[in-house]
Image (cartoon, rainbow, N blue to C red; front, side):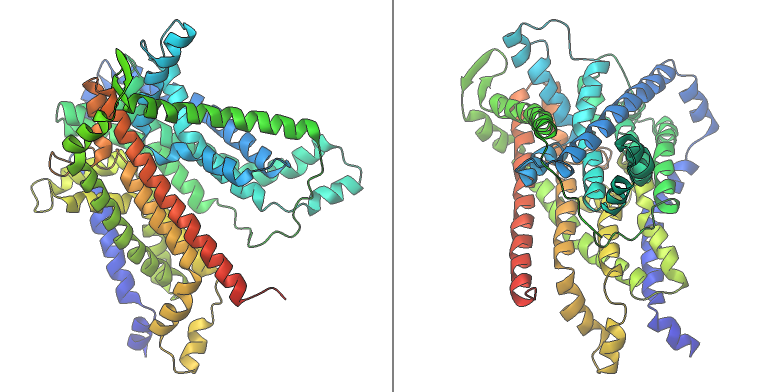
Length: 535
């Protein structure tokens, strides 16, 4: 009986999945740590560039976090607590910066505000965008959509009943803010701060592109490994960059809000307020214009003869870029498609095992599945480089697919975990009573009900695999390099036209994928409404 129960709970599959995470997440990381020697630690801490890099990393990350979280919360509040129109369009436009690599944001600022920047010349600006200011501006553009989406989702599902009760009791608005709103936003606010801080401090694309003489820990790690092949020092810096990510992971795992928000008890009845709505329009439009200005700069440079000396229109850059980098684009698409296909299947099976076939192993598997959230892409890429160097997969597309799969696995897994957790837990038992196998229940009932989540998972894997530079920077070679890594290479050669073309291609590709997801979900929603009309 025990043996039968053991297999019924899916424990062999769970053990196999745990072994996969041990082999491709824990083992590479432990291998990286074990290769660090005491001399490496001494060389890092005694390096003349370490302390300035640490101070600059903290300074830029803290400043960016304060601005990005405040901006994201303000935008979410204006969209959810005002009566402005076109909220869906605003949401789409506000998250566009998430669809291009971080390094593209740095290049966009150079094109606009560099020494020969378009706006620098047009407005007669003095000074330079290089340095701390450029790093903060670029990092804010790159990171604020993350906090915006968090707060937008939280505010969307807030119950208005406590506010109405407080109004009936005559409690002033300021007291409602401190007694209701702030406690409700406390956990999301702390998590947003940790998430944005980790995202910024572990990114090397923006500071490498626009930091000037200022160096951050992420850039220092990148230069030590790729420039000097010093894996020991790179590993030490990687461990330092791991600290904020681990704090974020621990907070999200053990201090998350367990309140069920499956539905809104009572939505907000937003009353007309001309001044509030006018401010909301102005603020949202201003942010959108800043985003579009940067994206337009890519288009402008991509179709110029030679930026900034010859701004005449041409299509040659597009043709030349495809001749030079078409193989890299194919690499990116292959990686993104393979990661999406494999990732969705593995994430679905893993989430099903942890939610629908509970056992003692389920909690272990769940913890293993979300552990990659605690390892930044730069650190994961370095650990893979040190672990698989010399193996049969090193230098192939397989190691890039594997790195991206592990790097981005946790979020799609949590999407499916949440979706399956909300389904009736007796579906399989009813099927067994009727003589229907578990496989048929999954295929005919659970998968169709999870269709929109599965599509979102595919989108997440594809978009992030197309634009990432962190997890693959230490693993790619000339034959396997994804196209996102070509942006920095072309910029270093002052070929801004080709770098802009690549940024546009990645942006258009990701917008196309997101559009397909939107259309499919709309069609699916309409079909469900037709099949199950509200009575």
